[in-house]
Image (cartoon, helix red, strand yellow):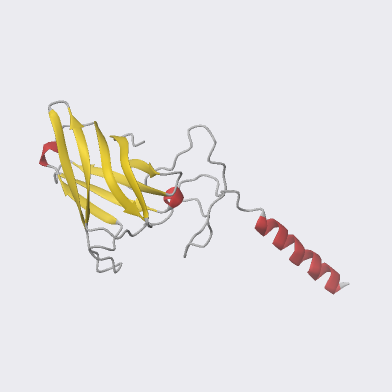
Length: 173
């Protein structure tokens, strides 16, 4: 009788464990988890209206491909910089990319400005220039600019090249 109950409990755990994820994505990532960092449901359908993930630093979220990766852009007007962080799908974890820099074209009322984002090393996380999730661009013109449209010219993430990704700051895409 105890064996029967134990088998039923084990079978229930397996069935409920398999039903927990409906996200339709790869689980082979190291450290991949479904603890929703932003208060949403873990497994969900990407076809839902208005589907998005809130950027963890409060910046503009930019989706690459079909939720393959995300970038968050955050303006610091006081410092005159824009910081960009790369994230895994669903903005769950930072995502290191193999790049030393990338460019974004900011479209302003009085012309266009190229922002060159340079890789940031972090001894605490082991991130290095050429293998990091964080990039910073100097932009003294940001003070008081508020909102602007931009185009990410090109970036390679996990072997896939993304080109001409348009977005708005602070709305994202």
